[in-house]
Image (cartoon, rainbow, N blue to C red; front, side, top):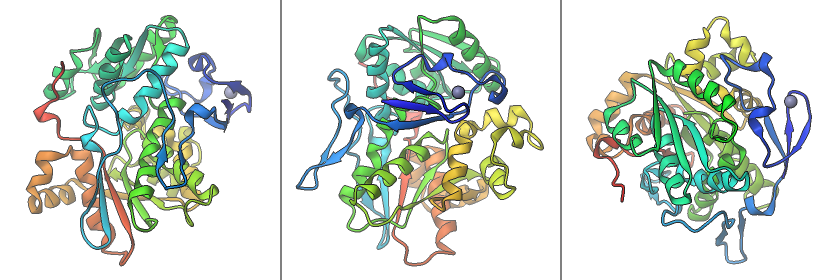
Length: 364
Ligand SMILES: [Zn+2]
């Protein structure tokens, strides 16, 4: 597979030591944005349909007990479907990218991974790393929920930073000086991203007609980037007749991409003014700022910001969702309520990205 750096246009073979190719002038407190473009894939990353419309998933890595994907597409009402990613092995969509990531670490001949995360990403990585016999080193901050920490303790090493931004700084400092450890930065890792995109192939397989809109919580932005790539691939291959638009869900007040897009700020560094770097880092969406900005420019993405009040009012009307899904997933349901006030008769898929972790998951 060939990658191109969108900043200096240099072409590189993949896998390679991604952390060593840097553009410090585009970094924020040592943390780089995702400036990688894929030139062409290796066949091991290709997803295809066979003649019967069944998906052929790439064979990646060793066989683990924990197969991600093939999650249910649930009919919510006449025009709306829910893609329930909470039933993945560790409870989130992130599992879809982990076999690729772990396989890449093996290809690099490394035996350890560093991860920075507030929860789902670390929980998923720890789980799969154990399966692959890879040591997991996790950076979290003291604000992470108790139920998540209980599971993150299964990592081989855990570093606790005082706050969110410091955890990123500590993670980058550690990863830059520990070359024997694979830099597991999910916000820029290409093979992880390519694993995520199987979700959209399943949606197209399972739905009766191509959706107009797919509502996805923004998170790190990597899921948005991956699903847009999947829809573009299927469109170019003649599998679908149009590219569904992705509704990028952000929380009101924490929506720098929407603000940046509306003010024509096409570089994430421009949004530092008026927003400070700590706010930007704490909204990890921004690592994929440029890619989501470009999607919105092509009219393949748009933004829905929901308030805490809108989310609370959804929960009040649907208390069962609170027990099952995390707050971010519920924000997508609140976004559905808000969006349907202005759009009628559109075919919509809402992605519920993660389960409510208060029940925890069981490690064997
Ligand atoms: Zn470059």
